[in-house]
Image (cartoon, rainbow, N blue to C red):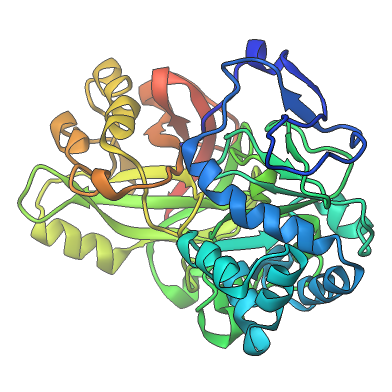
Amino acid sequence: MSHRITPAALAGLLLLAACGERDLAAPAPPAPGAATAARADLTVTEETRQLEGLARRLAIALGDPAFRARFRARLEASPFREGKLHLQRTLAADGRAELLALARLNGESESVADSVQRATQALEVYLPVPAHRRAWRGESRLLVATAARDGDIPVAFDLQGGRHYLDPTRPPQTPVLAVVPIETDFDAPGAGGNAICAPPECTSGGGGGGAPPPPASVVGPGLYMTKASFVQDFEGWLKGSPEFEIQILGQKGTSDSLSKYQCSGEHQPAPYRWDGGTSWTGSVLLFSQPQINAYHATHPGETFRIVAMEDDDTACEMKIDEDRWAQFVGTIGPLYQDFTGAIDSGSVKKYLAAGRSLRDFLAAAAGIIKTNDDLIGNAMEDRVVGEYHANYNWILRADDNVTNGWIKLEMK
């Protein structure tokens, strides 16, 4: 879940300036377009503070031209989308050469630098803004920024170690190297697997990477999505390009809870691979007919739920706390007598879904969740909600009955 900053709070953001921490070096001159927080309600989360130590050390090390040149070369050589690197693995590569350099350039022992990077959660580093990736050629005009969650106030460090706040809604003109919790599967087969892409996707930040899924005649019948339109990308600029997913949720065993049955998204194998942007047309399988048949054989008469998400951390794994999920479904279910699910009978139809099962869905996992994905919307048939868009038939409704998009679903 993103932590959105209100317009009133954003009014308190001024030009880039140091925050005055005594343990930091004096800041560099202001970087155009960046910002600092001047209000008490623009506070840095504790999770972000835990990432600052490693981000600051990296920024100081990047002040060294040789270290900076090597690091840029690694970014340029990355096979992953947007030129991403696994930060801790990069520091450990080549006999920990870069970790040793980072320690030396920060004036500390290797053991101290090593303890900091080991104590910090796994991080990826990259230039998330396409214009920054195109423009930066290894110059010292660079900021290193971190934020634990999408929407958090980003904390940035200049290459002298000066600490600054950035506007979470708009990137500065100065190139920014993001140090953020890992979203990419760096262990996928083939040096990146489904996370690998080729230009222009790696540089444009747009959707459409990878080969399209096979046509329906090859993969067989089932529930397909052929069009999608979202009102925004649901991704802060520090987190790079959005990663949309469609989750199929159904009854878990004989319980009153829901479980994931299928996911279609960027890192899924064909025919479930879908790398769509805010406006997309194509064909992606959401739930095959054999899957549908097996589900109904085990759960006669039960509906399944179609939920659109923007993934913030781990592909096709729902990371949503119990209260967030309850809020998400609690406002739309009663408004439509719980006709918020889907069941096939030759075509996609509405069907009653029990509200209590939705509230119990992620209760067991809530205690270990560290970040939250964006719940874009629950797919509801257009005639149920009374909202229509040409060439679309299902509406994505979210908290407070807000429409966040619309999709076209077809049984083929």
